[in-house]
Image (cartoon, rainbow, N blue to C red):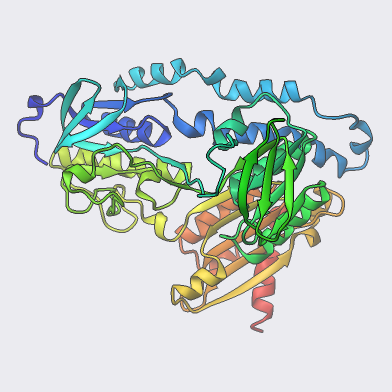
Length: 472
């Protein structure tokens, strides 16, 4: 892409998709001098703002606070009664701006980005059709996110069950709920609605949160069971029906039959590429990209965030967006693109240091490789674990504190390549691990990062002590 003829097009860059990722691509490109339009068919702010990250965490918070208080003598005596569901939902609504996007649209305008409402389709190189009009540009960034990956179960399509959008936006507390899926969303919503008084059954083909270390799913399953949730591992529905009484019936492959007022299907997500016009242009719908998010085989098309399938997490998509926005603007101006590893215009961390948090109770926080992933990648690794409940800061935090921490260490370079924490309120420990991995901090230097006492961060000292003691 060169600077010649830049005024011959409607825009330098058109971003299709107005969630956090698309907003960041548009913002960073605009800050570097590009003329940018953003196309959005629903609400500006996207899935995370209205149906995922924000409302789900708001729904979880009240129950987590009550459970935390009950673990501390003195506070536990002050906790009485049940959660006020109306107040919980009202607080949730405040974080979604009542499902109105005027504020987000105003922010786009203040950032100098034009908003085009409608569904964008690629109809040629640098051509985007929205409604009856085709806009021209020098570059296009796809930031359309992901959509639920719904399993093909007989009867499911006609049963009108909930997806993640329905459960995060409901103002009703069902008496009973079947949750299909043991991933992040299913696990979090099981905790949220158990705290609101719903009788819940979780169905998972494999261990809960199976992407993580094995002890993660075990501890989370134990916590759900303690909350009265019926956790069933290794089962799958073979049929789903909605009866004339409005209730859902689920028949399992082990012959059991379950009944509930509602059912949540949360079985993962897939890139949202349908209707973008990729196949008609001869483009691979898998959207393979380099680390600047440029789609392979093109010089004008970028795919950023969930749509490229690299790391389906909002914060990671925004990270990609910052890199892509800068790279696009640089290429438009024929400036240097800093695309070496860890450069300004690349998303290098996607490969080695993706942080992730499950806001369950206990929380789960992990970054980088699990031990099995590291071994599969051919790394010469060792692992060290420590009981978080034995750390003074955790013991002060809650009576009978239960949790675990694990580091995965590349022995050839003597650096951390993975870290996992499970326990109440441990998510804020995660960034220190992320910094250690991204910075490739040698263990000998990390030993001099002294944790304050008495905080839960002291687990870092205990992990390192355990590691060194095994090599004395």
